[in-house]
Length: 157
Image 1 (spheres, rainbow, N blue to C red):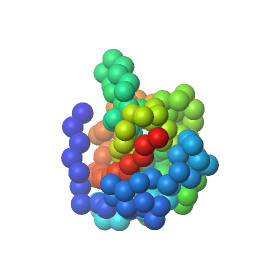
Image 2: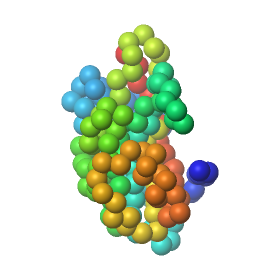
Image 3: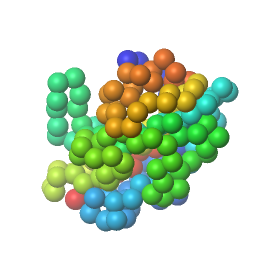
């Protein structure tokens, strides 16, 4: 799979790009997803997906690496963001084996981890069943991706 960044922008009122993620949005805090906003979606966008991935996690599985904290798809194409704790759309399963958001909680003393909050613009609502992993979702979504971008937050314990 090959993906390239588009001109979409992704922001959060909870943290700046490359800034510290507030404890509230982590596994040590209230574990609620941060608010996200996006703009500049490509023409023809009919739905969005959101993925949070920590590539710094010391986990390697066949064909994958890091830790997936959130998979959300079939967010309406009219959306320009998600409110804090929102789950508008269909939830996939994260690497904790749970549906919904599972906030940052890297191993103690492991140093800073980078959390990529990806927003993908799709040319249709996929109508996929709930509970897909990130990799299963991306396999099904790839032909429909019109654009994507991310905001990166940092957290350490």
